[in-house]
Picture 1 (cartoon, rainbow, N blue to C red):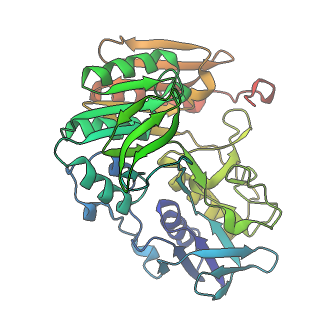
Picture 2 (picture 1 turned 180 degrees about the vertical axis):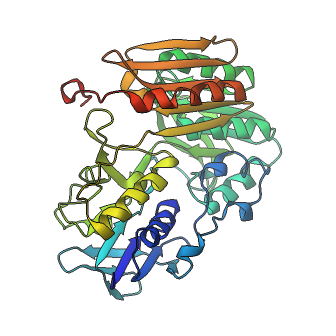
Picture 3 (picture 1 turned 45 degrees about the vertical axis):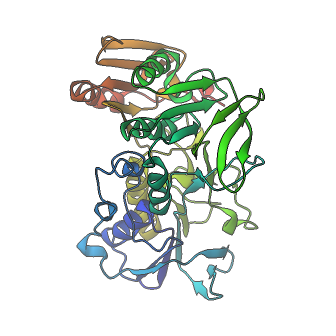
Length: 403
């Protein structure tokens, strides 16, 4: 229980990893390295309450558990490279840290559009600094806002912009419906209708070819040549795993860090990955390795990975979490349990109706694999009641797995 464990990444996954290492009995040193200057903080409110001015930035900070107060934090520091064979990491100040265990928790960064045109006025929403800059643009009187990407973050930002009184809010996406990928057509159509009723305009089936303006963006050029006037552009077009520092170590970094069922990377018992950068096989479903970008995963994966790193995996069941996520948009909430994306071929209304509160079930191979509630608190409570049923379901067969 001596030596050093380096935690690469100082967001929620890194914080929980540090706490869980102590809980698992690690008494050696723990060093957490993060490139942001801020201590770990809660990210989901950035596109909602904080952006809307309903919560202060200071309220986002997490308070570490008492057991983890002796952890060394190196914030505002970037890891340049990791040399797994040597068990060292090199930092951007030129220093090299040896380790006995390594937790990869470097997470994701927003993908940016590679299009010609000005950069000023174009935003992403991932960090506190991102949200501060975007709020400044959204609160300008008469702001015309174009959100590129109709996923969860894009639709949350669009809803927030409407609430702040933006003159125009338009969401652009090459797909035919918002959020159809994770939720399916049934809910996607209803979500579009609810957004449009509250003032959001959708331009779907269209890509972005470029941006107009001098030093500051004034318009978004679509793939058909038309132009959307814009004072503020929000790029919500997916994310990229922060794994470049691990290049050259023989790891599968094609989509995050590929791990085994115990979150170990590259067959190395001293290296684990946690949070949304980890691509792990979830035996609760079909064993196909996937990344999961849900708020619950950093905490769940950190708990499992810490046990593996400190005590080994012998006798420990494989990591098989039940994903949970939610999204607040306008005056309604999406609350989900399980893996709805695995059951898009068999979607059924379980309770309520689409005109009000509704609970939708997603099935695969005849099994319920996920539920999504849309509406108010009653709908969310209805979804939570299915959590136990989802936990009891037998695993999907690998033969029936999605590729």
